[in-house]
Amino acid sequence: MKRTMNHHPTLLPFLLLFVSAGFAYSLPNIIVFFADNLGYNDIGAFSSTCTNTDTKTPNIDKLASEGIKLKNWNSAAALCSASRAALLTGKYPVRTGVFPGVFKTDAENGLSPDEITIAEYLKEKGYATSIIGKWHLGQREEYLPTNQGFDEWYGIPYHMSGGSIDSHLCGYDIDGTIWLPLFEGTHIIEQPVDLTNLAQRYASRGREFIRKNIEQNKPFFLYFPFSHVHQLCSPQLSTCQWASSQFSKNSPNASFYDAVEEMDWITGEIIRQLDESNVANQTLVLFTSDNGPWLAEQSCSGSKGPFTGKWFLDHAPSDCTACPHDYDPSPTLDRPHRCIFQGEDKLWEIDGVSCGEDVGLGSCWEANVIMPGIARWPGHIPSGTETYEMVSTLDVMPTILTLTDNTPRDVLDGMNILPILYQDSDRVVSDDRILFFWRDGFQEGPLPSPYGRYDVVAAKLGRIKAWIYTKSSHYNLDKEVYHDPPLLFDVLSDPAEAYPLDPADYSDVIEEILWKIKEHKDSITWGNPLTISRDPMYLPCYNRKTNCRSHFGSGLDAIE
Image (cartoon, rainbow, N blue to C red; front, side, top):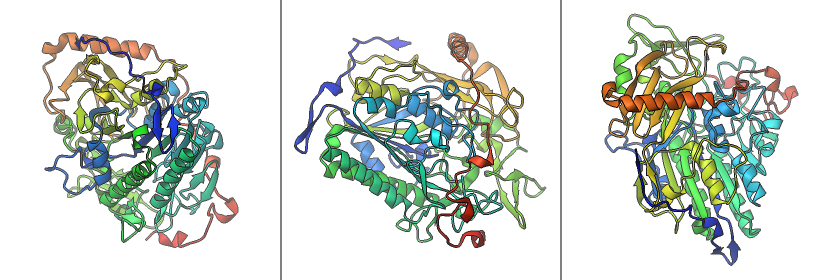
């Protein structure tokens, strides 16, 4: 299943001498943009005009036109924390213990300090390292970015539904003390965070970091995991998205499209600084997303585009309902997908979607697997190109290590994709790479409910995807369905996963996939699942004497 070409030795851009602004670089700068729950179809350069006419992303589209579009970029995990761990370590999250769910706001654990991150490798090469935005790998001090290889951090420790803000209280925040915090380094500097100008502060910090290190003749690594476009907390779905006053007249409340356009603007500001500082040609820029859209959130979330999961829609139980976060199914005869949230003094109601439609975040259907992927490096990556060669978020670490002449001190699951990015005509083009897709949410298993167990539910061998277990997203009530033989799709010609292949025609492929799944699972040294343990004492708090607020505003009067 491999087309053999003359093997081309890994290009060694780290040996080139980059000259700009009157001084020399021996190592390229690196920027990684990592969106939160952004669908493939939510970027103009990747969307179909017949399915997406609302999203405006001129800066990201320009980035794509100046580099390569990676149209078969696969997420490494079904959920946010695991995806971030995979990017920073190059390993499947089951190897780092970042499973089965995400790190909650009161998580006891985080990404182990024993793991070696991209930032730690790059610091050894003399890089300045910064993270701006969402971390979500542990909010306790020992797990924060500045203890994981980053010189500095300015951002929010977890997802945007992790706490209340003024004008939007979380239903679970009964006492009005769980406010969304903004960190600088290891300190909370604002709680709750002011979203009316957070984007501008993010952009300013990024531009300042670039300028500072250029002045110091120092190569830099800027990891920019956006807080966009994750929705705010339940139950107020009418104000579930957010953006600054520059992009929304009702800031901090906003539409999903406002949020996407603000994220695009931040991207443009960072790229503009590269241009103004004359270092665009010395900087590799990557853009992708951790996961796809949270489809049960409906207008608060993005689009699944062509990745509809059509077979599952046709076969999922029709009476199963997927609700927005923290809502529970409560069907009636005239509202079969009714969902409710019982507040202290109010019952909130909304119509959810059928479980068959919920094939985004939390699942392993293509809407949550295929991410928009972009790489730009003028003079190295040919502009205006695209590829369907299979790559993964797991590949970011080994690619950056190769680029910077670094040797990994652990076995990585990803691979160096520089030959793909460079579109090297002598590269080995392989269609026998395999990727494994893990998730939780099983009815039974050694983990507490609702996790059940963490297992491989699907795998891709080249263009063929084999389903071992099918299920909708998260912890919906549909039971996982086991498939023997596996359910097969050619996901390049059938991205909707609508037309199963005849297993009789693919017996050799099935045998190879099942053998490789077994081999992969046998290679796992199982440790404790780090995301389960919680304790309210670990909730970030500016000052308990002020109900964890750093300033005072509308606060508790804002829920209506």
